[in-house]
Length: 171
Image (cartoon, rainbow, N blue to C red):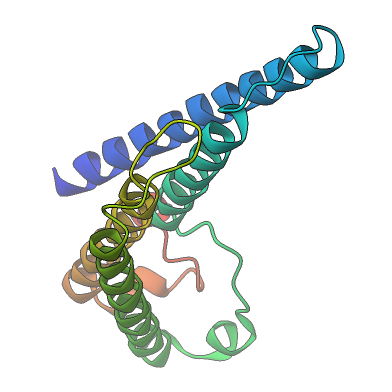
């Protein structure tokens, strides 16, 4: 049940990131068309584009993290037997959790500090941009916790096929 919820949440993030990519392309296309053809300035396009890019990248990164799809250097884990590989996988997840906690703490702090700072064209609080870090990296932390639970419940046998710790390959 938890695996299905995790998969659905990751898929929703992936779809949201794809929608934001389409919107980003539309904003950039409109900005170029307006400037080059219509000879008008679109002051908000840079701010909207930056926000879309930030949210898209972080939601997409979280979705890929859930699938264990980020690039890894797996020379050592591939050479280890299952039990040490399992211990290493848990250690890597715990280290990632520590990094995620630092990032979320820093982003939450920046949200508070920048709550009264607003973008130039749209007047939107910069906290909304930092919220992308909190949501995206917070989701990555949640996926790591779920993955650690899965590793602990399934044991070293989960990694017998190799370093790929994807939940979809072992479900």
